[in-house]
Image (cartoon, rainbow, N blue to C red; front, side, top):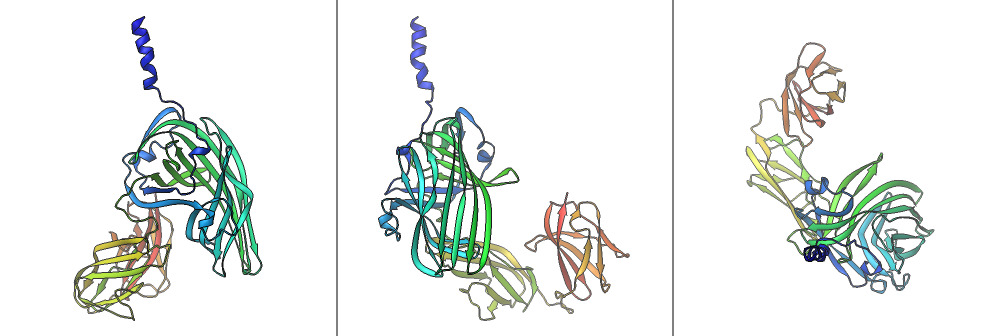
Amino acid sequence: MKRVLFLLLLTPIFLTAQVSINSSHMPINGDTIRYSVAVLDTSVLLNYQNAGANLTWNFDSLVALRQGVSEHKASSQTPYSFFVPNKVGKKIADTLALGPVELYNLYDFSETTSSVYRTTHRGFTLAAFPFPIAQSFQDKDEVYQFPLNFLDRDSSTFKFEFSNALAGAYIINQGYRINQVDAWGTIKTPFGTFSCIRVITDIVSSDSISFSGTNFGLSTHRREYKWLSPQLRIPVLTVSGIVAAGIFVPATVEYRDSVRNVPSIFAPTALFNANPTTYEVNDTVEFNNLSISFKSASYKWNITPNKFQYINNTSATTDSLFVQFTDTGYYDVQLIARNSDGADTLLRKKYIKINEPNSVREIIVNKDFELYPNPLKKGSLAYVKFEDQLAIQAASILDINSKLVENIKLNNKLPLNFVVPNIKSGYYILQLKTEQGIIFKKIMILE
């Protein structure tokens, strides 16, 4: 009997109690909560859908790429204090593009009661009407209904409608959300270990926008897997994405975190390309700046070795860039993008190759040709037809960044044809070198 009693006394130590989420676990005025955005690694992709009781989700291998801060402040501390009394505001975006309409300084305002956490108002500024505007939801968006317990399921509708004759703008956002608590247990992240419930949220919405006579509509089905803990006031971790044709495609993962040495989520992403990437001495080379920034950004280009000159009124600090290279060899190209939230650097080593001028210059000629079938199937024959038959000197397949994937052997007997190589399915560029110059065509290769 003593042994049995001892085991019974120990048993509760090894059991995890079910978690319940209520109104006290929601964000409040003054909360400044840091979170990280990470790569969807295999630990997440293989386990995020696990459901049931007393589970353990181990996501502590996540590596932060960007960080943001979720700030919750009294409506009186926002630009919309006149319109929204006694609510908690959260800035959603500096700029949000909805078709023809751009919204600036976008805030959502919420309230928490014993039975619900809901979004009640939305505030923004229109470019054509530069004054703060805030309006209540005609049907408030009930984000969570309390208490939230394992196997709970709830649904609610929402509707936000705005019209302004002076600005010539009409915006309506409406839809419904479904919350389902399908699991509970323990979650591990780089921030720590937490008891939690897991909530799957489906948000189905439609947007209708009209601005200065231009109409725009958009429908979306968004799904979020959220791990909620009474120990934190934002989800421990969220996996989110879009549902298309009934299939959920996870796109992002973010989690509550401490300070990391990574860029802000609103810092720019430096991106650029040149097409093609092989030229001759004194050719004009254009670098396209494809950087992403939600705020006004500045740029700095670095090219090494320093054997080139800027042309077409561009410089090391202009958005895009035109240069002429004065010597042969490989060149490294770097772009630094910077805004008020941080900076990002992209360095492409040996990105540009400069050759000696040929006696007959290779130029891109403005000639089209037929390629059939297109898309192409691996291992099948593809046929090439010119309106004016040209002699083909060489043929190759490039990736979308103009890097050589494979040289192909072209049968010059009419009709011209080649065997589609066994390479990864996707989009490519077919490059044909002719007696008159180089011709390109975008192709798709399938299994």
